[in-house]
Amino acid sequence: MTTAALLVLADGRFPAGTHAHSGGAEAAVRAGRIVDSATLADFCRGRLHTSGLVASGLAAAAAGGHNPRDLDEAADARTPSPALRRTSRKLGRQLMRAGRAVWPSAALDDLAQACPGGAHEPVVLGLLALSAGLSPLDAAHAAAYESVSVPTTAAVRLLGLDPFEASAVLARLAPSINKIAEGGTQAARSGIDALPAAAAPLLEITAEDHATWPVRLFAS
Image (cartoon, rainbow, N blue to C red; front, side, top):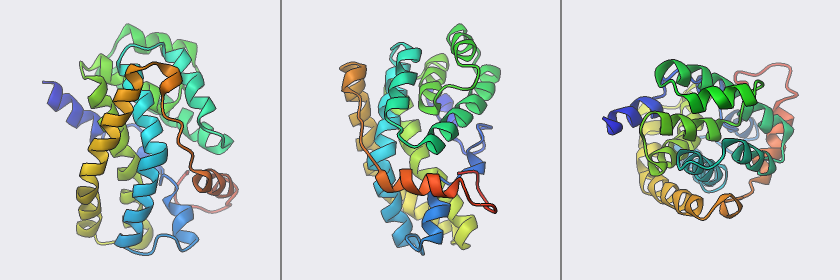
């Protein structure tokens, strides 16, 4: 049962709003840093080991029962870019709506009331995993996978990339996704102060630039 719940949560068709976001891929494509499947893999690998690791730790901590409000503050501190903070909270708000319909719980209701503008997405993801009966490691896997699946899916639209090649990128990243999820979960066991705080300055800078574009395909 829990395996099926994880598949539902990690499914790109889950109505969490990620289809409207590129995870920084749109800006990277315009800058010429993503031009094919090889450069997409490099981009995803970097994202996985920075923002993906941070998201995995936060999600695992939320699924492990840490205070969601404290975790939301920790997520804020680990997201220097105002544009990325807005994006994370917007995605968190959408994920909350979907999650409360699919796996309702008092914990989700309490967080929604405490953060009416939206809590950070990894925190909501972890709390939703807990509501679905999933483990902290499951939550970390979902967060790590999302960190690379979002830009990979976006690259298909942005570059006209062969979907088979895009899927191959994700498949080759599977061992790294597992390792990141395990690392985030292990850190979460040591408390909020021990959560990863890996920085991705270029993602932060390009997110601010992308937010000013008058015409764009993706919201972020």
